[in-house]
Image (cartoon, rainbow, N blue to C red; front, side, top):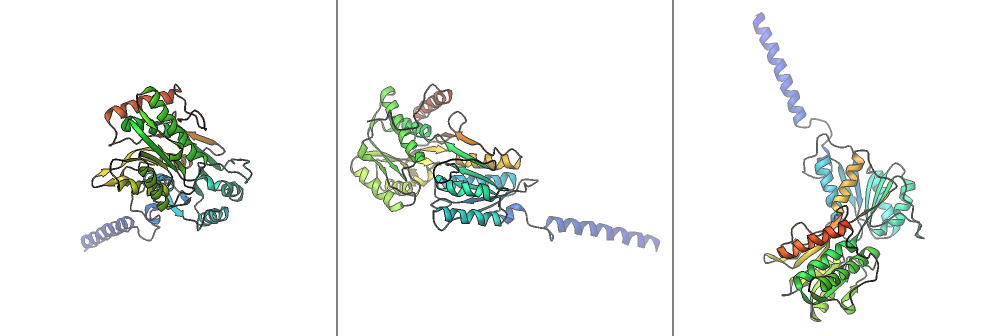
Length: 372
């Protein structure tokens, strides 16, 4: 009898332990994992970082093949590798009030690390950094200012800029080496500094190649156009069609959704090319197994967004600073893989990139010294 009682007691203990383990493995009554709460099936890092990261989109969608998407991809990486929780909100419009409303909504939901991609957020972030002092803000391609362009970056904010002119310069070199001669075009979105610098850098790249590398690719004033927005896809298609009809062989489009329209028009033509921007747009140009995207002038927005989140998670948030990402810190460049560029072009661009890093070649970030 004593042996039976002992055996029953032991079995009871074993089943209790197994039941407890099963409850833990299945989540039991505890909260969901960060990956589950953020609506992703990606496994969170262990242990997960207790950080809720929010983002307010600029004009366009989260998958705009450009600025919003690049920033969001950095957030997705932080979710997968650090276990942060994520959320983005799309404003009803693009006014300061629209942006401020969604910043407040994120804050109220506990998302106190907020990314704002674009200069349009400048006045909203200027006010938010004082209103939500226990929150952290990262504004990309802009800085907090009061509406009169008096910039103040508080300790809970980081302002991020890129050397777009260097990225455009490299794209200009690669384009000239591949196309060799003929006419090029440029389609910009809004005529703001970041887009202008892409244009100026691209023109300097063409000029450098013409003067030093034996190319003859020109860019006429009539083929430099700023559409005025970042979301008019139809207008982008129309502008590209007009340029191609004038004999342009390749267009550099730094224009968000307008650029998507230009890519679509290029896919409907033969013998012409387009250069992407911000992110690697090669796949966006694919049709029948080939892509019309020659290369892309990239800003590593995803990397910077991830690095800022990681810095906050590690207690190293560089608050109060204005950071610039360029060739020297590998913040810009062309895609790692460029299927439409020859090995010779890739090699020459890599050589020139090193000269940019060392300072041997300097690209103007303002109008001047441009190709005629």
